[in-house]
Image 1 (cartoon, helix red, strand yellow):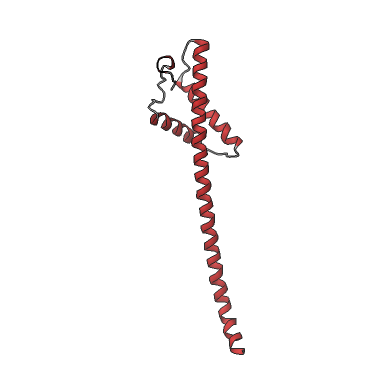
Image 2: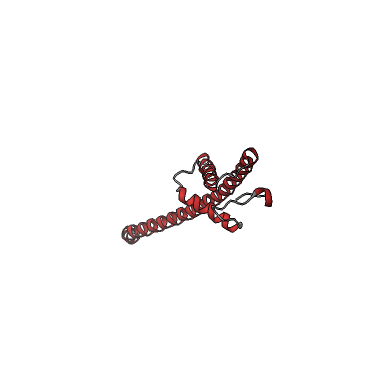
Length: 130
């Protein structure tokens, strides 16, 4: 019995060190996984808010045209879309998102949908707005 106690007293620090390393590695892996999942959720949320911002800006442009008989310039539409996205993010508790990133996403979305950023389309002729 004394031999087991002697062996255990020498192996216990080694075993506890190994267990500590394994636990730390496991926790790091879990935190990385949570970080990736959170990042994916934020990314998806940002895409949804960009689409919402573009929709709001397009509706505002149509309303402006109906009321004034003139197009709302693309800079004002982009600013409106960016403000909507920033406000939605703020309400969701997400801060410190770079405005340039939002602008890039908006312009990317417009290019995918066949619009040219900065070149407004004619909503009366084709039923939409840039």
